[in-house]
Image 1 (spheres, rainbow, N blue to C red):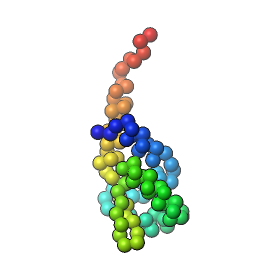
Image 2 (image 1 turned 180 degrees about the vertical axis):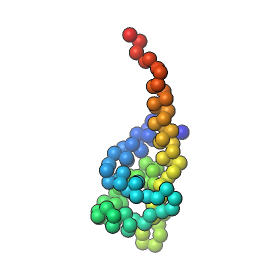
Image 3 (image 1 turned 90 degrees about the vertical axis):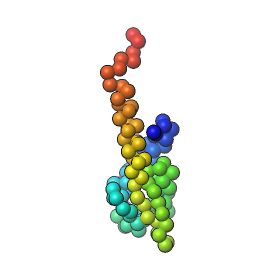
Length: 101
């Protein structure tokens, strides 16, 4: 179960258009090489490393070294947990009158 702190870190990582584009590029199954991401986004390697470090720290992607390159894949369970977190937030609010006035 995702805590509020974990969810906040993940949403913060998602709050950048480049990182959202990277997540959109990663296949549901399998991996993508950093070189392919670099080519598609036309960004520098240090910039990609920065974005991937934030996504990995938030637990949204998993990485492994393959020679000189890094290969990235989505962390499906973490994304599912985030989806459940949002569902729980909205479920807690539906039909609830929290105002005491």
